[in-house]
Image (cartoon, rainbow, N blue to C red):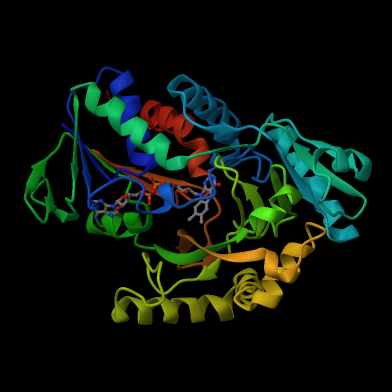
Length: 392
Ligand SMILES: Cc1cc2nc3c(=O)[nH]c(=O)nc-3n(C[C@H](O)[C@H](O)[C@H](O)COP(=O)(O)OP(=O)(O)OC[C@H]3O[C@@H](n4cnc5c(N)ncnc54)[C@H](O)[C@@H]3O)c2cc1C
């Protein structure tokens, strides 16, 4: 029996890959009552094109292939997709230099990206602003993550070889069994795909003790319908490539709504979507860890200071209007879309972990730091994970 903890995109695509290899007995344990309650259902839905990541990273290795496989899956299932490509715009000459670095990274990932001038930019995105040059990535597309998760669940169940138990939380591990609120499950192989809780599950196996997750909240605003013509597809800023965050961007979703965001501000809980955190104890320990990171890590500090300003509507508007012209303050409406990015930190080194981290120990496998672009990479990443680590 293969037991998987977590029915997010990581757990579901690994289960799918196991099925493709002929595995016949898979159990997925998911604490929520349905799919997509966390990162996999609360993201921007962008299929990234492999332009941001350090060439030696797993992110770079699987982004282009993941993008291709996910597009193929979406087409096969007849799910919505918007293939508009994306532009990355520069706000200063220094940022133009970073565009060239992104172009180098895209080339190293065997992606497609071109440096374009302002005239070409206007043909692609007539209202985007830039400082002389921009980067265009035609492979970028936007999908509807929830419909993909549902299709995967349907496929897995239709096989008759996978059982998904919703509402069943993994609590720990003892005597060779996974312990949940409802029972104990023996396993031949266990896969931890618990997203924001993956560090806790790994700790229950006495693994990854130097790593812990710090949550970052991603809030979005929505562009007023009357102004949505200002954005055709995706307009992104040049990111701070020392952090894993891409900066507040404009994304036209599959239903035509243009979202602006997400922010990346330290959250007070792994599922702190609303105003108040779920647990005061957790909030205090996160605040302590954030404070330590703030003083010890300059990139973390810079990001936190930049992000806190975005809670002030004037600053959020100012950042957004540096990417798109013709935007007025009242055009950015409140939105209920919010997600949490569970960012892994190497606590010993006080560093943000930039890549996915996979730990195999005996007959258990732990997927840590499945942060963006883990939705994009999922199908390619799952193939590699099964090839490399899981005996089938
Ligand atoms: C705001 C935001 C925007 C993003 N934008 C993009 C994007 O545009 N493109 C892209 O490629 N990626 C994007 N990402 C990243 C992407 O969404 C995630 O990397 C990906 O969804 C992670 O999937 P996962 O399955 O590992 O985690 P999750 O989706 O969090 O799934 C983990 C599952 O495990 C369950 N679980 C946790 N603990 C337990 C337990 N103890 N017992 C049982 N079940 C448990 C959870 O309930 C959850 O359903 C974004 C993320 C965020 C937050």
